[in-house]
Image (cartoon, rainbow, N blue to C red; front, side, top):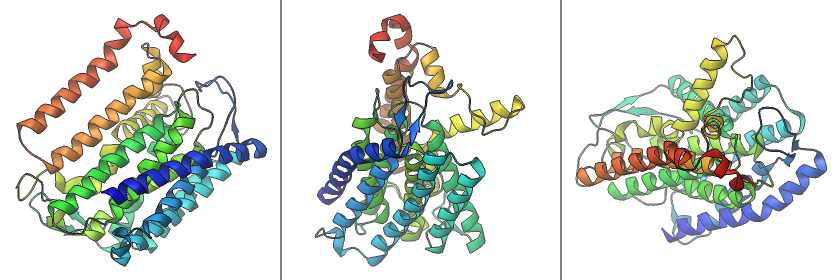
Length: 379
């Protein structure tokens, strides 16, 4: 655990420091987010935050290779993590081009597919689907590749869609990565196998990169992650989950904690964990597609009706709207992980309490503190 904490801190520190250089590069190259009607920022903000986060991930990976415990892990741990970072670098590069030249949607999708193809070429893909009874349904290479492409591309675009308020995407992904680290670490401990796993390593580094970026990105932001950051985060998060099915058997993934043999919730986590962690932005993505299609517009056409826009409309300030969405992300992500690993009344009571608190803060706070009283929070 201490080495994972060090990986987290290295990633956070390097990302925090590199953000200053990324901002300067963005200003010099003109990679700046101009103010548009659908935006909530009032002045141009530089992009390219993804470059800083990618640097943090690479630094954490390099340090992990030299640590006493992690360095003794099987070669597949660092081979898989390195392949994920290379794919992340590829999709981050596509995002940089978009931040500079505003690529069309199909070009960006092509870049995402190429990055996923590299993951599949590196044998990082679904190879089976765990079943509730502890068995597994084996996938042939074509099925596994198709399922991998759908999950990774959907996660990448979900993160991209939620990147609408200062600190929102970085916080949601950071929370999701932390939840996935808990699951990966506990899964290894429950099955009494080595605690050095690709999923735990990548999620610790990813959570650190998000934490290091947030001080520069929280309202009022001095730097946006841009597509270079949102696509990088989505790929690394979803690819981390993919590594579970290559390093654990179906019976191991389905085995819960608290002495149970098979947990009926845990079996689907390798397939749906990225979706459960990002259920808020993915729901936002689905609603946006339905909303725009019903209006006769392209599903990629921008608008100002995302969930974070609606939170602003009911009276939340920008900071508070972001924190509210963080709370929902944490409730769903950690709730899913806890329910998959543990059983009993205490676990369900904690989930019910968390749900009640989150709902109350979402809908009651704007009533208690009307919008005009929250203006100072925006300044």
